[in-house]
Image (cartoon, rainbow, N blue to C red; front, side):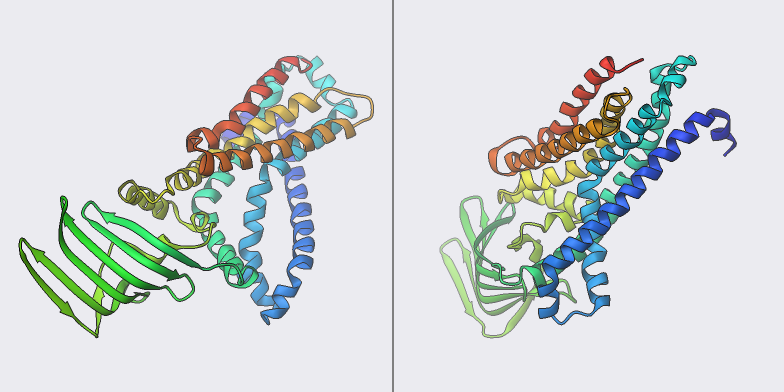
Length: 366
C-alpha cells in the first residue's frame, strides 16, 4: 500500500476511480438490460421445462451472465473510457492538467493502470472461470433452449492413435451411446485386429466404454481367429463422448488443460477441428489485450473538447466498439471455415485497432 501511495498522485487516483467506477456502472447496466431481454425471449422455454426461479438462476444465468459480460467487455470498456474522458474534457478538466506541465504520456498512466486491472481480471476469467460457467451455460442451451436441434452425430471416422482407427455410424449426445461401432488395428498396412459392436456406451463412473454384442477378429499372417460374443465388455479407449459432440459450443466449456490435451490428440486424429481448438486457445490469451488497445483509442478520441459535449465521442466510440466485435466474429469465421491461421485471426482486431490507436494518439491534443 505504501508503494502505491508514493507513486500514485491525486490525479491518478481520481482517473482510476472514474475509469473503474464508470466501467462497473456500465457493466451493471448492460447486465440488467441483457437479463430483461433474454428473460422475455426465453420465458416460454423456462415455462415448458417447469423450471423454478432458483433453477433458472443457478442452471442458466450463473453461466450466461459471465458469457455475455466477457463477450461485451470490449464494448463496455470502450464506452466507459470515452464517456468519462469526454465528460472531463467537456468540463475543462483535461486542459488544466496538460497546461500544468503534465505530459500526455504521463496523463495516460492512470488509464493504463486501470486497463491493466481489467486485463488481469479478464485473463484470469478466460483461463479459469469462464470454462466452468460456460459449461453450465452450454449444457442448459443444449438441453433446454435448443432441445429440438440435432444431437446425433453421424458417420464418425477417427484415428485414436498411430495404428488404430474407429468408426461409429451414429452417436447420441444425450445418452452417450454409439451405434454400429468398429475398431481396426493395423501394423503398417497390415490389419491385425478388427472389433465390431452393436453399441458402445460411455460409463461415466468407471470412465471407460462398454461394448455390447461385439465380435472380434484377429489376423496373424494367414491365420484368422473370429469370436462372436453376446455379452458386454469393458474397454479403455483414448476417446471421450466430447470427441463426438454434435454441438458447436463444446470447446468454449473446456478447461485449459482439456483444450491442450484435445489439441495434442488432434495432431494424431486429424478430424478437421484443429483451427477451432487453436482459435479458442489463442482467444483466451489475446482477447484481454483489447483493454489496452481500446483504452488508448478512447482517450485519444475523447480528450479533446468538442462542440456538442460527450455525444459525438460517445457515438464514435460505440460505432468503433461494434466494429471491433464484428471484426472478431468475421476473423473467427474465416479461421474455422476459410483457412485463416488461428493466431492471426485471434490478433487481427487487436493489431488493427492498436495501429489506429497509435495514429490517434499522435493527433491527440498535448
